[in-house]
Image (tube, rainbow, N blue to C red):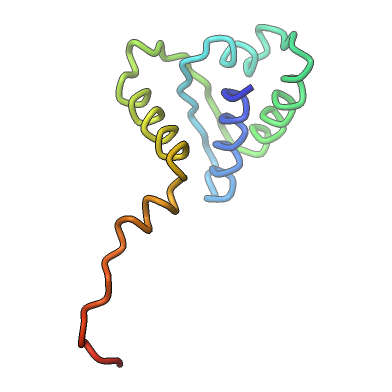
Length: 110
């Protein structure tokens, strides 16, 4: 469920950014094969996500989906885990607040 949701969210973002072409590199061979129509989506709760992904892909001039085994994709796996840890810690907004620099004292106004 999470992987399919990630695909749909990535496609929505690509569309919002105005992408005309999308290249998906996924560590889920199942999703790659299902996107290409070579394997059926058997889990009923995944059918709507698959349909949404296919609908979104139809809006791009060109798309591809390639399987990349996790063992060959250590950097992306590490970044994904860091993002999950950040969300578990309160999300990007909390991290941004922690990094804010306090205004200089006595600096006056504009």
